[in-house]
Length: 190
Length: 190
Image 1 (tube, one colour):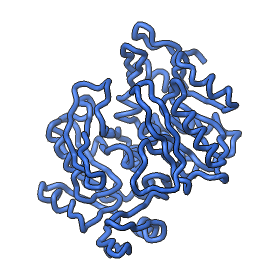
Image 2 (cartoon, chains in turn yellow, green; image 1 turned 180 degrees about the vertical axis):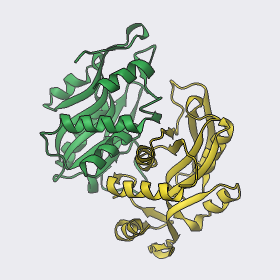
Image 3 (cartoon, chains in turn red, orange; image 1 turned 30 degrees about the vertical axis):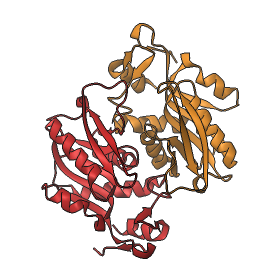
Image 4 (cartoon, each protein chain N blue to C red; image 1 turned 60 degrees about the horizontal axis):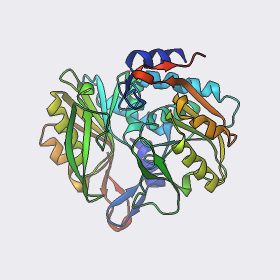
């Protein structure tokens, strides 16, 4: 996706430790017009699937997910990272974050993820795939069909894709970062 | 806003302790079409203001804020509830949550909130107004102009509006809950 890649190279910043900061247009300040282009590209890539629900994880996945849900006219569920005091009857799993070096819960109410759902998972980043595998686990608990997973940016050197594809999950990323060595952003050619 | 009020009465649930659950359509599962109607109504209500940025707080404010940003063609910033390890040069304040009975930080990078900004704050709920006053504080720190605050649902019995209007802030709520006594949802007539 050319606009996205140009934007990453223009406005993204690579910090020591394999960190790519895109917080001027994706995950702190957001460019809604780019989010819409991203949503359109996800629709194109998953055109052959039958999706009746979008799922994401708070907070950075919500913006692309809700614009995609608007364009596709399907409900959007965001998994929470903490058990709300008012929620019972939950699907829950634990995910380890390498970035934050701690475990966190990922929680969805059973009311909003069930065996009737054909789910497309959307998130901003695919790194090692731990958060995504948490969603796979919740879909299994719910008996929901996972139609695919779409990421705005994939860091291919952290190998999340391999782990998901081993589980026969269809993975689409709109920009693939091959390397952040020496704080240089190197994107995969299409 | 008639569709919203009908939806609250149909799908909202009132729990003991003045809690209104709207997580089937606003803050866990989201109805993107309703979010779009909500965004259009905010545009109508704030038509006389000159807004060049939407601001919200993660996570439940992001969906209405980004759809509003898309329709208004302005960037959207979501304040974070925890200081990211990769963020320096921040605007920060502390907010007390009555629901969670604890303090949390509200943080925005100085890069994305400045004296050039004419800001509209959007959130799902106005209760006691503590989170909103945190945003007022961040706008003051930044020298930004706060053009107004828009909420999907206001709980008028928790008096957040009075506290904001005392500061000469324009407040618009699309549905006003007058009472949740005896777990009955009573909405204000327009």
